[in-house]
Image 1 (cartoon, rainbow, N blue to C red):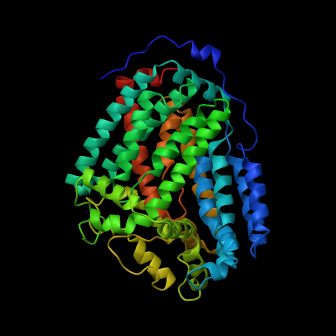
Image 2: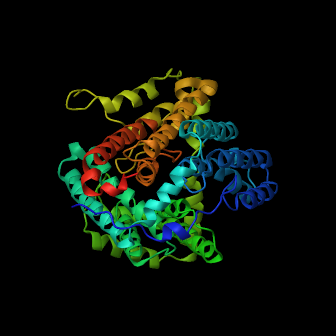
Image 3: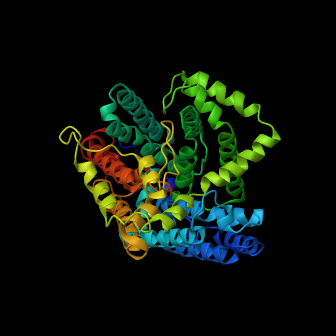
Length: 483
């Protein structure tokens, strides 16, 4: 299928991107509110450190008119590293008393936030300066096509994704590349969304259909991945550069509340839901059909009472917090087990280039076993879950409390360089490159991610994206790369 190049839309002449400030909108009011809230509890100094790190990270990574994927890669783990401070304040507890395990929570939080600053500096250096010519070219391309034409691209990408996921289910040995192929549909979902927002049509019919479909499909999985569709939609709205109207702010607030509400409900029901989905089996398996899964999820949600929802809020805040294992690691390494001097990072780097077909003795990645090793067995054992230490704790285990920041700076450089190369490479320059960078990096930021898994996934996704750029896009939609 080839999408032809229609005539340029007059929108390109009458709609200009909004100017951006040094910080994302509402950053300073949020920072002030956090400072005031932090002053009301026993963790005031930690709250000040958290807010300072947030402001510096936003200053480094805010790029108006571009998708905020690098800012998200910093901001989401910042939330995970900071939520314990403010939740503990709300409960009137010191963070060391807040943690369920005996560890050094104070230092774990400070080192996590400092590590995220190193990551942010690396991403800023790797991404290079903001280029307004790319921003204008991206908007011009978005405005030059009809929304229906962008929806055609997304529909074809979704069909390819469905085939790839089916192949991954039939042939588990190809699951990683097939999952990477399936993930490319987010490239075209992002471009569809940005087109709608850039042309001032917001949730137009085709985009609303795509959004609803992705939300329903995500809710029906074992892990109920409903966040990605909201995050990509938010990225598309920001990248459109449209001026923020009161109605848009209201819509953003409603979406944010919807995400929080879904997260609370999911936290409250996920245990019973997963037992139903797996048919009572151990492991991350799906044993019932899609409609039955959605029906069960609806049944569990509507039967929640106030006590269950309150418990869900508390569990969600506890689940967001991801520094407790790091706090234990700080007391366990190197006291009981030595640093690994780069072994974890080196394994992450070489693993994608050692296909199991040629290296039959390559070890499986077992996050839970690694967590147990460096925490004295706190993660337990269960086939239904995989519990990781997170990339900051891994950097500490590898390099210690000083050199770990150099490793995190390097990881940030890697992420920033991906964004920069995709944005400026002549084959993907502009909108296509931004969309691919967003799809590739959207899943790397969470604090619980192991870099061993993240690096391999990114490399495979980049390989799939490169083949798509070189061999498919020029024949399927050549106007995407025409300068």
